[in-house]
Image 1 (cartoon, helix red, strand yellow):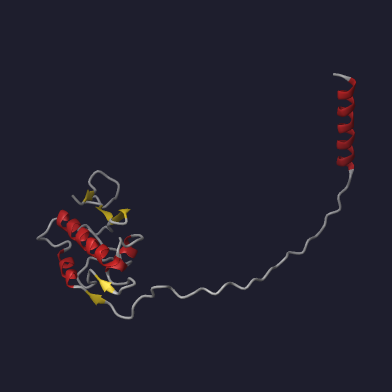
Image 2 (spheres, rainbow, N blue to C red):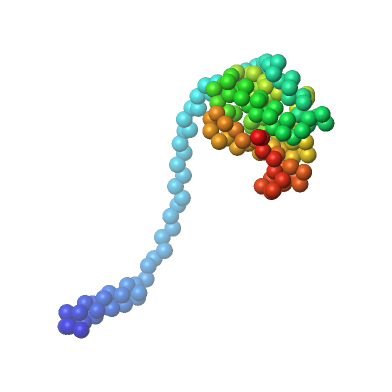
Length: 166
């Protein structure tokens, strides 16, 4: 090592030694509390209507899970009801099963129901159920297409017996 290198190394060791022997006095810092006023939140653009109109098309929802129909019939019925919703509102309802079901039940900006809660197979959380009592899985492929999946007889999604609309 050249003399300059030794000199730099020695200087660094001296600085490190000085820093390690220096005592630092602890400082107590009081927490800073900053209070800000939250901005006013405007009311929703499309509040839910005070009344719900049940469309005549809702009558076909009564056939869901009927012994006279098949699971494919049920999926076709749901697909049809969703197509009617799209025509009326301009796109698919969004969210999980309970949110999509709520939109179909009329809890949407237009207050129009495409299924009637009296005849629809719903659980206590407001989810649409397949004929085995399992909530359907809704997957929005696009704003105009929705995949609807029944868990099938094993009651579990993502298994080989899941059933999708044709």
